[in-house]
Length: 301
Image (cartoon, rainbow, N blue to C red; front, side, top):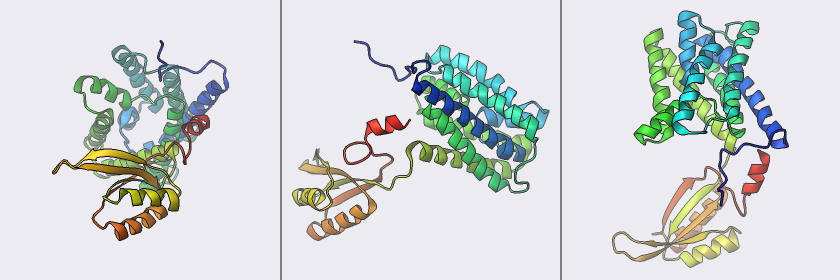
């Protein structure tokens, strides 16, 4: 039996193939606008290969896009040799297109910020453009190259989570900018930009959600179950648990509610069992019966 790979490419010239490359084309252009019109002119260094390239651009006058390309090509080759086929043609197309867009935009637009003297505005809107563009590239199953490749290579040898390593790599690059430019404002504004980029990527990929995940432990679990099903018209799951102290058998209710439903259920539980244990977590994304189905999400891509 052949197990399908998550790196399996779309069929050439299929509707999905065209959609993927349209996302890459538009996404990389938005990233380029963010760098050229907002980030680079104010010397903001948002980590990654483009953070290094921005420093070299302002120090040595090197072209921003081609400098980033000069880093990305060997990094991708090394990453492919060490990690296998994680970086397909679409990733190469993405970072090549970004480099071309960046230098073409510099040629026609110039090197002045769109909003002169408003570095915070540049941080926010530059992060917005880059975040949306990177998220569109991710939706096409490509990566933007750069620090995520470095993080994946380091993960192979350190066994640390790639997200942690990516933050470490970007953080080091930002701190280097303090040494290079000798201005405390630059790393501070750069960290703001990194935060905005991360939040925008999350929102673009997963949307806004106000749903809450609940774990409830109560002796009145049957009454709570009836309320969830009959009053709130929601579902849930009973999980079997064991108390750590007395090793008593426990029934744990797992369910997902919106804020209004959560408020109503908490009031009800307080009336019937004030000693109940309730853990409320932010639901990052909910897929399945009663919510958006996995198929619907995949079809939207």
